[in-house]
Length: 129
Image (cartoon, rainbow, N blue to C red; front, side, top):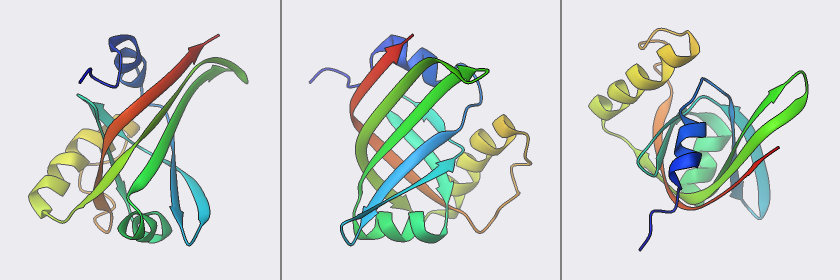
């Protein structure tokens, strides 16, 4: 099976610290919220809690969108769809926090209440403008 995320999309996703919109669904209702993320090799990691985490536990099918814009004008967008796994391992959570938090200007140890969620990407779509 071909890698679902083309190299040009991987380059966009790792180019700079941008917000992702993490879409979950539970009880037949969508929920979308901004999150910090780390992408590598077809896997997106997010640290989260609350409604997003509860939804993933109920339904692991998720979507993630990332957009780069300047002054409100879109330059590119990526949409990823995949399956989320809640990772309860504290060491894996700390390692993910060390990858994600500093990228967005936070200390790795900040937000210890967040839980690691890994999304295995099944499909990717993108558009450059």
